[in-house]
Length: 451
Picture 1 (tube, rainbow, N blue to C red):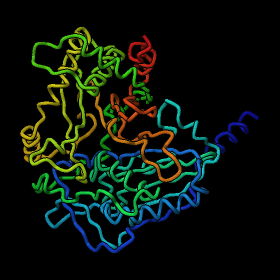
Picture 2 (cartoon, helix red, strand yellow; picture 1 turned 180 degrees about the horizontal axis):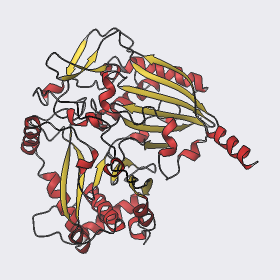
Picture 3 (cartoon, rainbow, N blue to C red; picture 1 turned 90 degrees about the horizontal axis):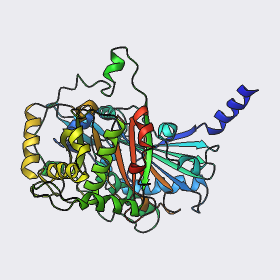
Picture 4 (cartoon, one colour; picture 1 turned 90 degrees about the vertical axis):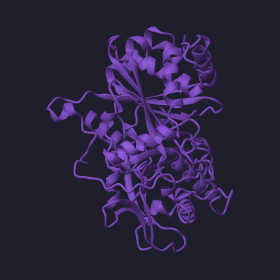
């Protein structure tokens, strides 16, 4: 009997695919080719970047009406963002590029039904593995964009709402470009605008024009854990969303700024630097690091305003670089938070146009496809940004009830920051860690700001 009940429960939460189609720009574009540049290429062995937005049924008609409205808006927005309807390609020298042609399939749109799942069930704070069936392209490498769509969208009818799962090829765009596209699409659907208000700036070669031919033979599933390859079971990972209210964020910032930093010319610490050191310290504590153990902090920083000449916010592509810094766990934990904040601040501030150019030149001389283990020992790596207005993505039936990352591109220490659902300066922090350390972190009252 218990087996029958379990079977029914599984059926109730199952996601059933009901259709698949492709959407192209609403007008003929012709043949377009755009070379991928040094800022794009290192991410070929990352997985597709997955985002999940869920909406309550607040008007907007039936599910089928919403799907048609979304497809109609997509046709319009792709007239400007047509690269998302293309494929990866190579020129005669083997240099990778984005190709678009009118006879290509376009963006993949999958329709699905999961009428046993409610929106409230998806807004919990635990991991995203339960979201897997709501987002396409799980475990698909960006390199597969040579023969797969560069954007796949799954629209799932829930019991009381809609889930929108998006998989973007990270080799062709970063978070800034992703949310520029999403907000432009939403504005067309909700009637704010009949065309793209701020068109994407599509000429990547203005940011960097070195032609790099890559040896792609080592690109296999690069996220495979070394322990697994050696026959040992991989450590169990857990993901959790921690919500920091505006008051908690302000308190963290004032606490970090309350102790004078080392006499090294540090400026007052920003909200990001304050929250970053808060996470770095408490994650290191939860990992039980020894004082002599090194720990690396990495942030994927937007370089649009750092490069020379600066690029517009509408630059479409990857214009990010990983900024690394490290210290001993003992120094990080035994000193006041201002010590770690100062380490982070110095690394970010020194990453100017000259540093970016030097990093690019070094990479071009010996190109290396990034793997997650390259993030560093005992690392905390921060992606996404609370500056992205993710809760403003309203297609005409209200703002999203929740915005999350999918299960791709997760490893021990990966952190995604989002604008908080409660607005203002609140920030949602998604963290992936080994299960044992996560258990300690979620009981750490100081980390949770419950003290």
